Image 1 (cartoon, rainbow, N blue to C red):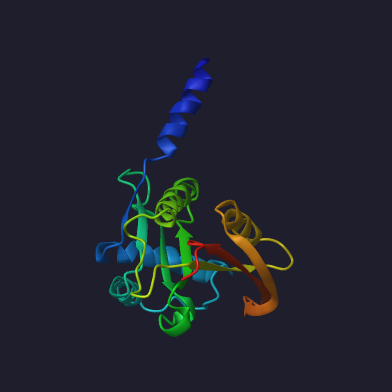
Image 2: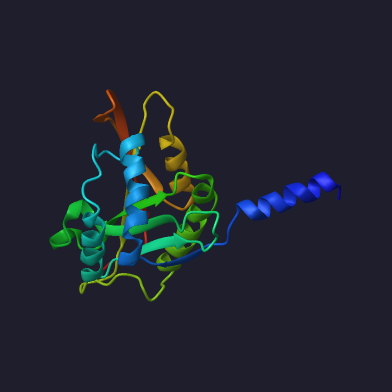
Length: 207
């Protein structure tokens, strides 16, 4: 191996901090909010035009714990990288945990906009997600049964650009099934955008 190859290997090691996945805690609220705020202010990947108060993160965490739904963060202790590299959680479908939607949830997943987040946190959170799908003890219980469906809704620029199409492809790689695309249903930054819908079936047996 040449000297230049060694230098490149060292640089790769230095720029890819080890990560671990943990349950979200109130102490991570500020970092979580900063990631979310970036996507609200800089992209169409989030339909909201304002991020709202930071206290909403703590409220979401409390609500999900009460409903036994998972909220995970991808973390690193590397001093050269952000501490929270990404986060993901399941929320009640359309915000309604009752009646016929009790076994269906919506997935929210965000990675830090910097290079460390893009490289590492998707892998970490996705790994924990598959643990849940394969019968991990943390799989949410709703009294009448476990989570059956996970829905992902992804804003997509109809003219290309941004990362919508890549996000859709990433979900498909994770086992989600593309279910359709609504044309020009959102408007942000002076431009219309589509929304793609994908579904992951966690358990296939009938209730």
